[in-house]
Length: 179
Image (cartoon, rainbow, N blue to C red):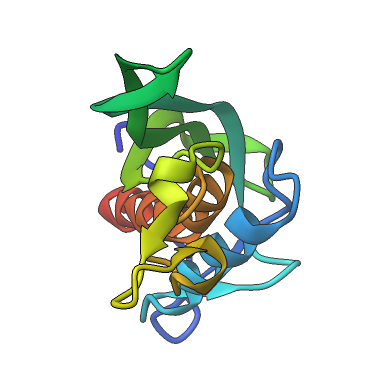
């Protein structure tokens, strides 16, 4: 570590405080980070912990990954154009660990990122949502898809938990590698 800081342990556990993550609008990321810290045998989380873990969301972005051809009838003619059907959500954070006794930095800020890929259907396209059953009757399937067909917004939201799990695990790995 270079600056001769060492963990002070209590029964082999290091106690850290995990305040609300800056930029975490609904607290889901903060809760997942606390969960990952608690699941690590040599970390303990307490509001009065010797060390304070500071995390700030620097960027939360979505990029289009995949496209498909979407033929649509316009004015009686089939026109082919591309429509997005896959995305990648990336979250970039700055992480610091502070000794609360003297307010000195143990490490950081370190920039850590993680991403998750997901696919979705165009909820405005009847072609994506309308299917024929065995009797030839058309019906809309999105409300009954059980998650296999999600709108872009729903898929983005569903990707949040696995993304925060991956990112929280990376943060815990950095913490445990620093002592």
